Structures are given as structure tokens and as C-alpha cells.
Amino acid sequence: MSDYLIEMFEGEKEDKFMGMQTNKIFKLFQVILTFMNLFFPISNFAPAQTLNEIHKSNTIFIEAVGQSVGFFSLNYDHRVHPNFTFRVGLGVSLGYTVPISANFITGIETSHHFEVGVGLTYGRIISLLADEVDDIILVPTGVLGYRYQPKNGGFVFRGGFTPWVPIDKDTYIDRFTGETRTEYHFGFFPMVGISGGYCF
Image (cartoon, rainbow, N blue to C red; front, side, top):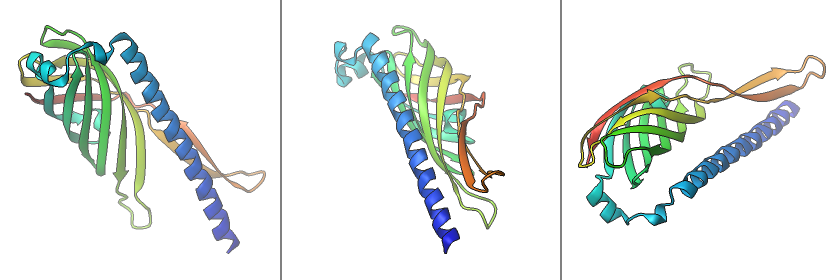
């Protein structure tokens, strides 16, 4: 019974810690978006309907690896501002992932763009072992690359550097106290992503 209570207590501490880390990540995401909006305020531009008449604002694309933190993903990207897009998708790995990101793109009057952005990918990874539970992941991501997106719509191509920054959990027994301890570490995986789709 005491072992059960200890495990439950440790689990509550881990959940609280993960909750704190998640809040920090979302706050960082908000700070980055606020910083971007200071230099390119959305309110200074035309409403969405007018923007879509100037630039085709909606894109559906398939991404290999990239910010999906998986094998590939199907995504919807919306140009909320001549220089900013917001993306959400559904990815496939050993389970599923849901990537979201906000991106800054250059070149309003051209089809060739430099793209930089930050994102966050949630997912559930299915365990292949019967005695292990599925893993829930929350991975900050980034993108630094090239985007071909014609002003009047049509074929879209994206490619670039898409690093993953996973949060790893390490559980061990302290050899001095005998207590079970948990530490969290930020990793870094220098991944790449390639996308193809259609803008309308």
C-alpha cells in the first residue's frame, strides 16, 4: 500500500512539473508571436477577404518528416497577414501527432520566400511492448527554409531545416537516499522537412 502511495505521489509531482514546462512553452510561443506582431502589426493590413484577393491565402500540403515529428503529415496553412501564416496538421508516426506553427515569410510580391517559424507538436506514440504504456509527447519545433508559393495560387513547395527540441524524462534511484527521482532534459534533433501542396 505504501509503495502505491509513493508511486501516486511521484506521479503527481511529475504531472505538475510537465504542466509547468508546458505553460512555459506556451508563454514563450506567445512572446514570440507578440514580438513579431510589433514589427508587422496585422491591424495595419486589409481584412482576410481583401487579403485573399491580393494573395491566395489557403494552402493544403503534405510534409515529409519536418515539424510533424513523424513520418509525414497532412496540413492546412492560412496566410493571416502578407508576412505571416498559421499552420495546423495531422501527422503519422508510431501513433499520431498534431503539429501547429506560426511562420514569418518574406517577399510579398514574389513567389520565392524565405521562411522562419516556431511550433509545438502534440502526439501519442503507441508502445510496441505489451507491458509499456503509450507515450504522450509535446515537442517544440522550428523551421528555417525556402517556400515557393505563387501570389495567385497554384503549386506550393517548402523545404528546410526543422529542428525538434523534445523534452526527455529520466527516472532513477538516488544511491544515497534510495528515493526515486525524475529529471527532465531538453534534447535537440536537427531534422529537415520537404512539403508539396496547393494554394488557393
